[in-house]
Length: 344
Image (spheres, one colour):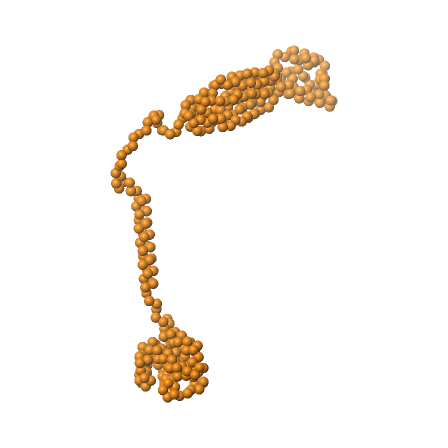
């Protein structure tokens, strides 16, 4: 769109001819905006002219930088350990359709390569990164490589890659010599080689062994101790229960029933009061317990009645009734209940 100029001003071409320098200032020196209020169309014309000017400046700057095309090379590490990976890079600025060389250096292994780009338009940067490593020590020189590309004008160019040096060193020896020292003879360390850690470990092992020995000995001692004696009434209760389960009175063995019942009571008296009741006759036993302070009068009468009835059945061939048989058993059980020893 043509620019509309105010009276007294020349054309835009004459403005360029009057200015020696090319820059942003020529716009303001060549254009003098009227002080009076302009129409809306004139305002849009000025905005369009400003945008075109800015675009022109950007293109001129890009063209100027495009002339500075160059090729560089570098390594991320110039000194690496044997077997360690390093990156050798070749960078081309302000070019396109770049053809990078194939890196082939003796005793170096190419692990991988990758192309990386940065920038836009003519300021674009192309970088080829070669990941390498070597297993032979020495100095390695990257030289003699060339890259091909086209510049901003489209012309084909070829440039040499700058030289880069990388040194691979070994980590097997700390000194510069590769000499191996001779084998030293045996040394007598004595007590100096016995550290406090070993002393503590020995003491802990000894303490553990002593504890195990003590526990084993204590366990054996517990097993060797006899069980505590059973109370007299516990033994009598078990004997009475076994007699009851035999049912001797129902099979006609009345004499055997009273004989075993009498024996249970006598052994209970012996265990409970420490009296030799089983070896005494009924008369001797009753005479002995007559003056005993451990039995009450009721218990003495109960015991007298029970033993006399038992003797009648055993020696006088007395035939007791069912109620008398049951009563004798209940009397024996009652005697044990009322005279038993209470555990503490």
